[in-house]
Length: 163
Image (cartoon, rainbow, N blue to C red; front, top):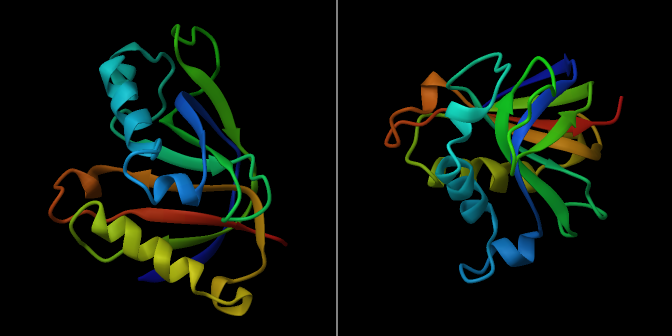
């Protein structure tokens, strides 16, 4: 796992969302993240969304935290756009705020295990190891050309930290 501190500008996204929590996601019967991703593709998000900046790059964002990683949050799955003009019916908008982030890059691994293990490592970190105290404004994952092969996925997770 690689780690670097970055100041990231805001990112406009169009996609699908769900209100969930760690407790809900820990139970296959109540989990909402995977159904949200499936619905995004069933509604042909990649074909319908206009003003895409980087086709083929997908974001998973976590925002509107009730408290911390143990409370409810909004999960958002979509693509970066240059504007919110012409948002297709059934899709939502979100802006990941500009802020300081600690960016973690995984080693190649099998999906979804590579993502789960990276998050488990992040959750176990002290603020010093994390690069600061978590802000709980927004955190996000980036899936690009390095994640095409599900047996050798490399992904980036950005954790918002207080300046």
